[in-house]
Image (tube, rainbow, N blue to C red; front, side, top):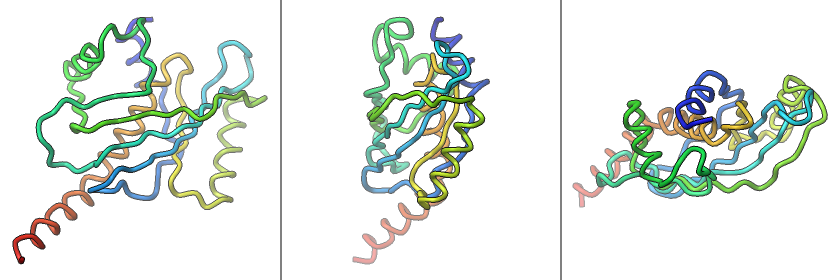
Length: 178
């Protein structure tokens, strides 16, 4: 599958089941843990569970016009020959990520013996029981998980825009008062 097909597949099939409740930090790095669930293409009827986190480096909105950096997303040669190819791919489609560094760390890759719907219910309940407001629950295709995780992270950045703007303006006002 080429990058365009993977991107379209992820756009059609990514679901953000449970968004991160806690806001991203405006002036510091934010660790955004996630649980990604996908129907297994090998063990039909089972679910692939990918647990990890993306470290979003200093998610402030006003930044120098640098190119965003993506690490740990394992874009293989099927999708990308160079990182710039991926960035150009996003820009041509009107997807502009803030100029930050997005560093993905996959902590575990397991199988849930059961359907995707059962895995979703299990992890929703688990996150609720632990009152976990930091971890997102995302579904998508197993073979283009990277795009699904980026869609999730982008949704978190966009959700944070009003808070970031307020914090940035408050910070500048404090500096002007000194």
